[in-house]
Amino acid sequence: MADYYNCILKFIGDYYVGVKTYGNGIKKGRRSKKTEAALKEEIRKIEMDSMLSDVEKMVKITVLKENWSEENERKNTATKEPKGRKLTMKEREEFSDLMDVNFKCGDKYVTLTYAKEDVSLDEAGRDFDNWIKRMREKYGNFKYLGVRSFQERGTIHFHVLMTLPDIPIEELKSSTFQSIWGLGTVDVKKIYHLSMVGKYAKLKNYLLKNLCEFREDERSFGKRLLLKSKNLEKPLVIKGTYKEIMEILNGLEGDLKKVDGYKFKLEYLNFIASTTYRRIPKKGES
View (tube, rainbow, N blue to C red):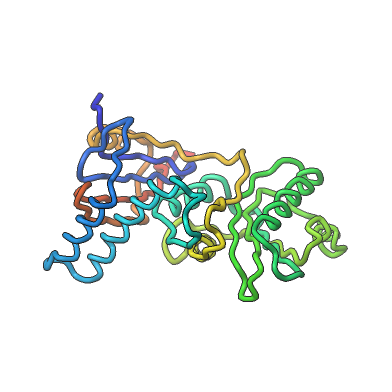
């Protein structure tokens, strides 16, 4: 077994797998830390590279900054000046994976808004946690994954995916469900279509847009990014060499159909390539 990996296999639910490949190997059990000086030097080299277009330079610099920012964000948070930032690729993938693995058609999409103005994030966090407790008292245990964003009037609101049972129409008409929140309006929709990738993943793209806007707002500084239950499942992830991962991938039952992919060039990793496949059972297989 090699002491490095340059490929990751991710099982996303029962029907999808993702493969991420790195141009250079990454040593297992260690994470390299790039100094700010080294980061600036890599950015300078990218900016001076006449072979790259402006778009290619922007992409490479963005990925470099994201990786460096994520490593250093947890240091001395209390002493930093509050400011927003871009959502990192890792944060996008975490939300996407949790949504893909834990939610399906038939689950619920709930939006909570406030009637009053000027609700702080701390107050909203307490209100949300209390709402979850009251919901579980009535509907039992369930999974949830939520995001926040600020409305134009400046007040926070919530978008939440939930594995709730079907709610009787009588409860919705009598405002019983609304009263559990009790601080404004509640909109609940049954999810009839969920796509993982591309333009068809409208709900995921909308939630990611809200997540980006929340993280870019300086009011989100130092706050948790996702509202999520502890019973959410994570995708199974296997790290290994490209050869090892391809052996596992080729040994899976059924066929694989590519549904999404991208590739970035990076100096310190050479490149990052990611491909998502849908697993298609062979005829006769259930």
